[in-house]
Length: 213
Image (cartoon, rainbow, N blue to C red; front, side):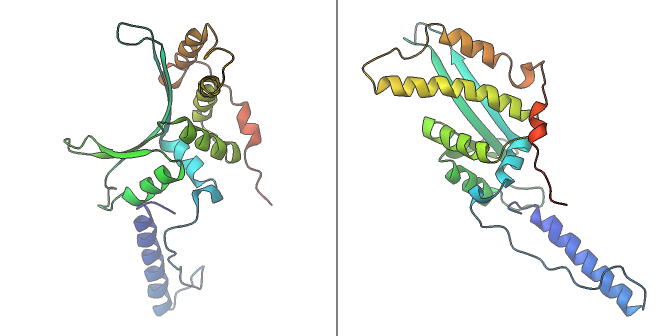
């Protein structure tokens, strides 16, 4: 475990061990004969397992920004962003700072406090660069998502490809920055994501982890 939720696990372990000791002292039959040991929070690299993918399935958000030409913008604005927000403190009073910072550091994203003037301020992780989005992509290629969020992620990747093309075009003397109709493509993708999604295809679940028997 990596989050303050470990305190609830510790409380459960204390209760199980106390219950076992109480039954032993009364000579009652018990179904287990050893004490449970409390292990510390995990400190291994996030790249080592699928923990972060599971956390993203629960609380992550893949977003696309598409702003058309206007008096202030000479060119259309297209952004790919990934966000995770968590309250500053868990419901047991412990801080969520450490594991949120670990995630932000792992994917080289921004990390800041938001809603600071409200009753429940939050920590927010947000990818703001192409490099951080690509790092997240590499991780999720290794440890895929399995909720409906996977569908938003795949659409998000389509827009990320536009961003990669744009970055390559800036470094090249040939080609255009985007396809001529790129903005319409991005808007169409954005309009089918998150709470606007109406089509759900679950074929990706066929690749769910096969557990050894």
